[in-house]
Amino acid sequence: MQSVKRIEIFANSVEQGKILQALERADVLGHTVIKNVCGKEKRGKLTDDLAMSLQDNVYIIAFFHPEQQLLIEAYVKPILNKFGGSCFISDAIELQTTKCAS
Image (cartoon, rainbow, N blue to C red):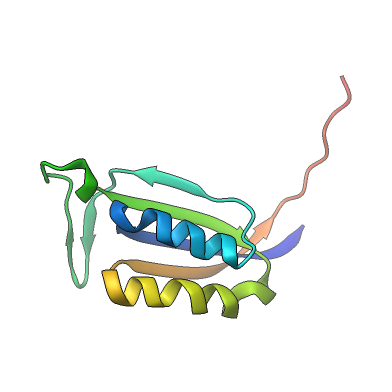
């Protein structure tokens, strides 16, 4: 087992490319994007009823080593400050597995 950090970002899909570039610049090697998410948060409402697909919301999740956190925050925070969205960083444990020989 290895301690890692998990970042979860909810944002407008228009900003997806900028956010993924920011994660890449911070050497986050992988991510998952779930498109067309909706929900409600304390600052307002994320909706899925907009006619244009460019206005869909995305959920981005990625895992990284704890020492990368300050760099990730430095790259991602300005994007969210300018364009909106929510970001959460939490602790996680990576369960390392080995491949079984067939």
